[in-house]
Length: 89
Image (tube, rainbow, N blue to C red; front, side, top):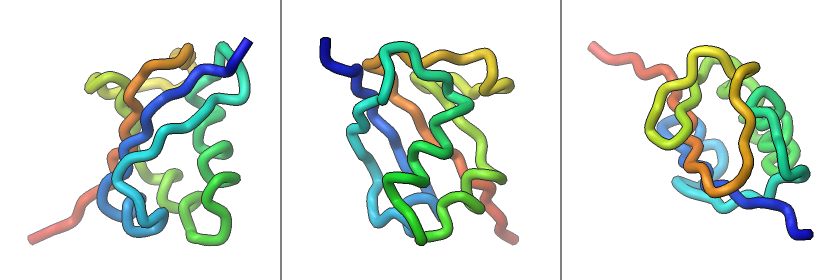
């Protein structure tokens, strides 16, 4: 059985760090906790500072903001967005 894929959308600092705005990612398991996605993405993009960016970012899954990443399990087909904090004046 093949592993499921999700689409990851990178915004702001996450896009700058990865050089991407969108990426198809094959999950390592058929039921993958959103809480583990951060470390997985950092392993795909090492040494670009993504880990620090993700620590202060929020997540959305299928255009719904996620309050608690521990409660979300990815099964494939989802669109996951990394929403970085934005400062401005």
